[in-house]
Length: 453
Image 1: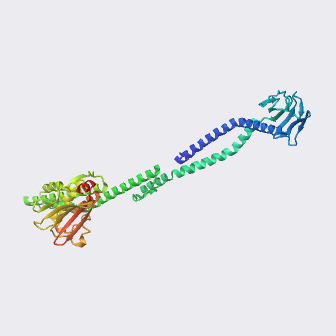
Image 2 (image 1 turned 90 degrees about the horizontal axis):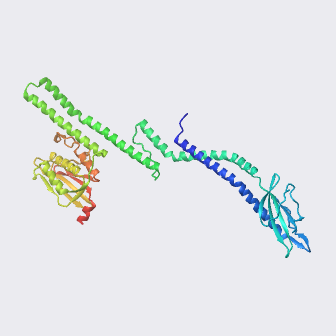
């Protein structure tokens, strides 16, 4: 037997619950129906009897009844007795054979053979010593017949009620689970077509399914980003590693065939070493970019005092202070990751010296303008033609291949990625044969703004 779906099981349970509640309601109605029927009959008996009282009178010792007096109304038989219990007017029901004493104002149940009657007596005084008894008699409601009528009605209504409950429950469950069906369909289509760009796209809401949909969309987005980064890494690595691998293979073949002297062997080994170093740097930078794009590289943002960081970096780079000039005021603080910010400046400085003039200079300056911090690395090198300025941020692009020996072409791409991680951006101003200025724009932290104010 096929296993029922969650929607069908929910609908089944709700239907069963409604059936149980309907059964309990029916049992309750049956239990109180007899009581309600008797109370209703007693009320009807009392009202009918009292309606005849104003039309009953005695004149000169004789009973006089008004024209609106009813001996039989609403199933109630009204009889009038004298003070001595003699019947003056009215007719007893044929099956009422019981000898019942008079009790003023008391409605009671009287058994007369197989029949049951409700009896109510009222004393109507007429003068100081005279008066009449007015007795009302009506058949008691038949509980058995009433219960059978209720059961017949229940047998007709209950199937219809259960069918409506089942259909309503299934409709509600289906509507409630519709977002889950959408999630399942989207996940299945992604699995079949391997298209991670698809999204569930449910409208935002506070219910659990909307939150689950949003979580899945975020998951798909991260998966797509990871796969794209993996594809990019594979494509870049396979493209860029082809050249050094070919050079290493060629150097090995040459060494195997032609290296006869120590100098030739050392030259082959040096070539292999250079290409291996280039491959190592390339792989390291590709991995770094991939981690930055995927967000897997830990970014530890904190308040960084720029002058201290840049002076320490200049000592690490070991450039001559006359060629690497710092123009950084004290007490300019940025909210950044010190390691990533150092890598950004290092890449810009190395790039500036690589494409600069022999014995040229590089200037690093920092300033705060309103709510922005600007960190500039400027050189007096060859500059970059205007048609190439947009391309330099692309991976593996080299403005001057002759000067990029040993480089990977990833330095400025990493710079731009680090700037985006910090919520900033890069700008370039360059004039050929005059120099270039790369500027990092970062949002100024509130603490810095308050201090400078």
